[in-house]
Amino acid sequence: MNTSRTIRSLMLAAGLVLAGPGGAIADPMGALLAHDLKGQALDAHKLEGKVHLVYYWSTDCAVCRDSLPELRANAKGWSDKPFVLVTVNVDKHESDWQGYEEIAALTLKHPPRGLLSVRLNNGQPAPIKLPTLVVVDGKGQVRAHYEGRVEPEAWDKVAELLP
Image (cartoon, rainbow, N blue to C red; front, side):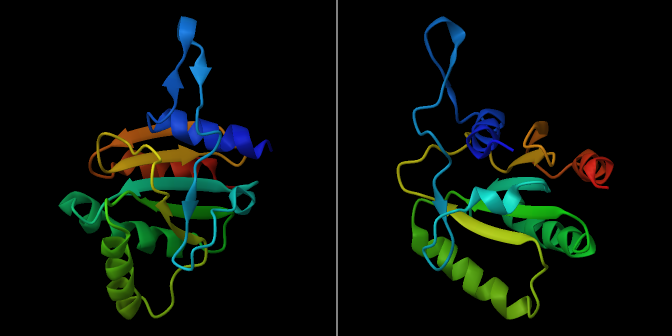
């Protein structure tokens, strides 16, 4: 799988890739730049060959916060499948995300396998509407894109793509 194409597809689906002259797709960032709580860069190779659901969210967004337990519960249910839930935080202040994750860790004694929580690096564009959800197949192709509350169809799409 072409990792840069996967990241480009994610960005396009989330409205993060700009159209260049003549409508050509221009990706000025080259890749989705994000990091985890330990400051480690997003490793897109962890997504290769796996269906992944990418969830752009903010602690300022009540709908976003309310959806996270459902997302984690479903990820736990698919822990034996090639599935990764990638939650991408877009808060203005990194400390807001860190505080939320610390509180969430208290209630999640055993986080589901296949959960990848990252934060968009400063300067990276974020989706205009939150939450934004992107479903990507194991080959790195965007298969669905949703904005707002998590629609049941999103889970149906993930289930359809899983072996």
